[in-house]
Image 1 (tube, each protein chain N blue to C red):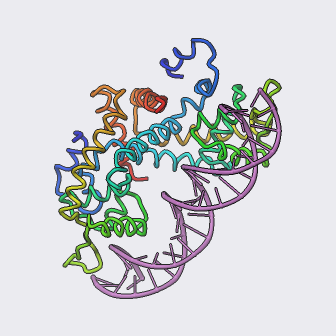
Image 2 (image 1 turned 180 degrees about the vertical axis):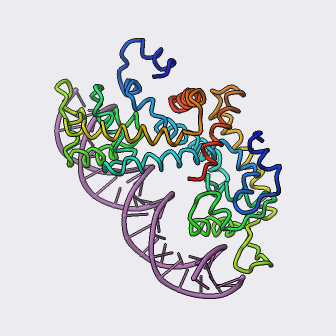
Image 3 (image 1 turned 90 degrees about the vertical axis):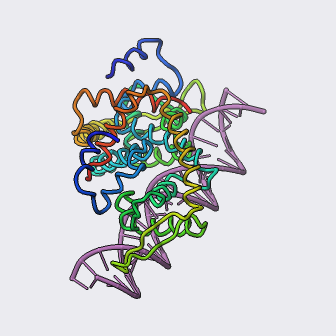
Length: 161
Length: 161
DNA sequence: TATTGTTATACTCTATAACTATA
DNA sequence: TATAGTTATAGAGTATAACAATA
């Protein structure tokens, strides 16, 4: 349906898997979104692997390294992961000395997750790697397209179901 | 970093999980993309469940119901799923009488996957459900934004890594 | 009673390798 | 020797329920 794709299909009838783009699946937004996400995730994963991090552990570390001092429950809600998964992620990061649990004096049930000095240092490096991967993943977009893309995504992502 | 988010943060310091949006994770494109995808997938899943389909089986059925007559290998390449996963998906759809494997006279190794009459009928219904879910998921976007979004996503999705 | 974090368990998904039959 | 499809299996990821400590 898009002009760029239509231009490609004006040639000879494509052979091989490419020709399936002409199907209506090829213009299904959910499908395209899933593919784009898979690509982005693969790039992030490759960039974070040298630091022993994946997308999730990186997110947790990044939030712990911020000045937000998130609780485990907040991490669970924000990252949309089950509390038990947060426990596992933090156990791993804590075992590596990157993060620690601090008790909240106001409510002894909650534990605030903060990055150690070592954790902040690793985050700094990983952040640069992830940033670079993001640039490469979205290299096909102009700066303006990238900004628009971010705004659109934020709208979709922020809406609570 | 974006103006829309900055405007939101000018208010009072948020409490609860929402305040974590102020973190740089909240403007990480890969993160936003993952969230948007999760939301889209959840919508699609809910819409397809009444038909006994998930995102993947729906994609396979849709391609089988098209006039493209895809081979299993083409499905594997196009959907970026391992050939063994395609086998499992088609086994399931075939057991339900929605799809069948046709031998290719030109190459007896390959099997073309085509939808049965029953399969085409179910796809028709599921397609309308999925379309409706997509409309609801992207309801926050104007038609123009939606088109731009599609073009951007197609560029990201089509690029072979 | 409700909530935070934790443990345990089962289920789905994904990745990998080995096998067959054709080419 | 290479390719299409199949089978089997192990690992990662996900969802769920039950529990202890605290509110």
